[in-house]
Image (cartoon, rainbow, N blue to C red; front, side, top):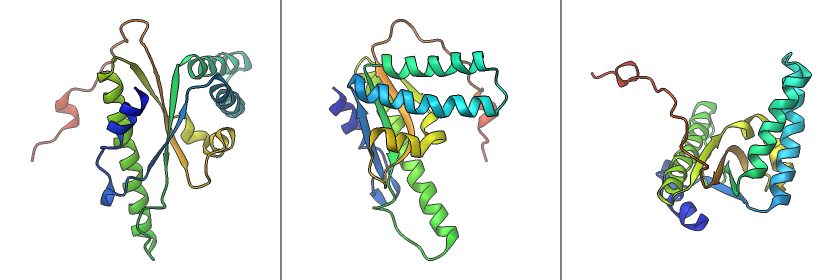
Length: 175
């Protein structure tokens, strides 16, 4: 099932059709535990530096840890610039990087839709962006795989809470 979901994610549009996404799929307890521990230590340090009370920081870290380790699968979405174009000027290099990021995000969106089509619940987590080196080290990812996000997959224990969305009139402008 995960392979089918990833195959669908790989059908996402990408800049120059270069497909700069890479997926680290965590299904074993050891890999999820290693990631949760490593990210948790960095998360706690950041929370304390932000002035969060130690008890609250511990609660948030434990919640994050439990979400990662209790999910049957986690997919860390990574970006590689290897297949992308290289330009001599900074403006185009930045644009190329942004296009690669957009491509990875589109693959993540397709992954979410594919998981839903398979009857799974899925949660997008941006935390790996705050701990890229930590995630790379914890999972022994290749140096050129830059973590961008994580999707937790599993069977839903109930109906998800529907969160309010901005009305179309506030986010769209017809010209």
